[in-house]
Length: 318
Image (tube, rainbow, N blue to C red; front, side, top):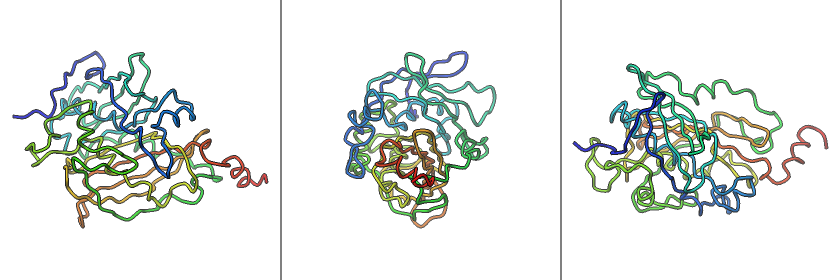
């Protein structure tokens, strides 16, 4: 019987963990709105980073062997990873993924990731099945406070806006546009956790090769530049919170899906304004949600031209 992963997993007093890994940044050439993103070194330094951070969902792959170690292949069909990103990881830095040790038949466990120096990269929950407790992001979303009524970046939209379904698929050799200028074959060549289930031509329990969970984020987000709630001026953005949930999966390579995107919430901080978007993934013309991606994208106020001036006008100061 083919095993999904051969990743070496070890046990500590507080959790299971995989090996140290050095994930790669495949988004150096990413552009949107005609400008480079925070995953470009020069742009990242302008926003206060030492260099370009790796895209958050890249880290999800290190948790998949831990989840399947606990819940088996069932997790690939109905699993969930829900995290808040705590610190940036640069290309080549080593990180380790951890999951709590089950004491019974838990359907949800804590997860976290650290660097060699002990600094935290992300923290959240992993779960399986429809009866699991609320994820860490669902809990966070339920507790969001009202945002600043004088929003500048997202002042033109309100939660509840929906972008109707559009078709999307991922095959091995087609790049996923300006937002994701790499192919699935590129990703599989650089992914931290190799799996026989990802291989071209491979027979799996679901038929053919499956999409790595981190690529579900790519599928959901690769046409985000068409969203009706986009800022009206250029911004530099960063993923802050993210959840990938599989209801009836896994998702398959070279299969056509339809995606519906909904603006579910707005929030902010001293430096950012954020939009929370949920992407629901379906088979064409079907009503059953196969998977969903919840994403909180923060736009830096400093990257939005004349932010302070526009904010002052909204407050009636000019």
